Each structure stands twice: as C-alpha cells, then as structure tokens.
Amino acid sequence: MLLRFFSYLFSLLLGLFLAGVSFVLLIGGTSNYKFDMVPWIKGENALYFLLVFGLLGVISALLAVLGKVKPLLVVFTLVTVCLFIYGFFISPVFRFDGEAQAKNVAWLAFAAVGAFLGSLMQYSSSTKRG
Image 1: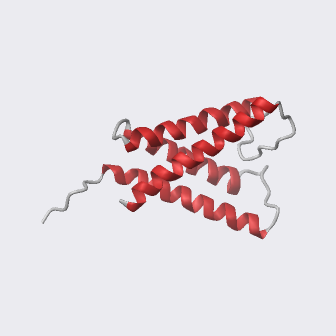
Image 2 (image 1 turned 90 degrees about the horizontal axis):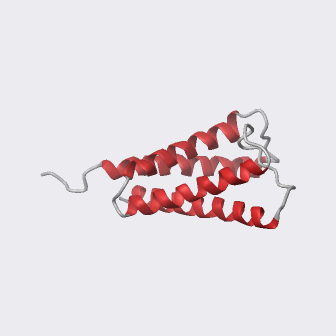
C-alpha cells in the first residue's frame, strides 16, 4: 500500500513540476532553456511536450486515486522510467556536470522505478486470504 501511495505522489508531483516549469517558460517566452534529456524533441515543441506530459501525470495520478482508468498511471510511470533511463544514461547528448548530479539523477531514476512498481500494485488484491 505504501508503494502504491508513493506511485500516486510521485506521478502527481512530477506532473505538477513538469507542467509548471513548461507553463512558466511558455508564458515568459524564454528561449535559452536546455532540454537534452529527449534529443528528438527540440525548441518550443519540447515545452509543449513537457506541458502535456506533466498534465498527463497529474490526471493519471488523480484518476488512479479515484480508482478509474488505472492503466493510465502504469503507462505514465513506464514512460517516465524509459525517458529517465534513455535520457540520462543512454542518450549520447546528455552529460552529467559532476558526481553530485549523477547521484541525484540515479536516485530520481530509482524513484521512478519504484513509482512504476507501485503503479502495478494497484492491481493486487488488498484483502488477505487466510
């Protein structure tokens, strides 16, 4: 149950963070941001991707808490894990600035894997059989 709650919380907070950052950058008209995590999306399209992906995270977390459309949370957390692993560890474009940043990203990726596992826990039965 704790892992499932972590999955809801992680998806909600990640979604709010991504949507908030992209919304502020879109409103402000900022053009000097760097988004190397997903190299195939560039420019302003990256901000729209972040906004939609963030809103999808918030919606999937809220719907999963309400017990509706549970697979959406699983898909969101799986895509998040895939993007983190590819974007930070496999992509030839992204480079760590130092050991501290590498550790922080490793912990974030570990949290994303935990959120994915927690999203799968919503399908387990909550009653014990004796």
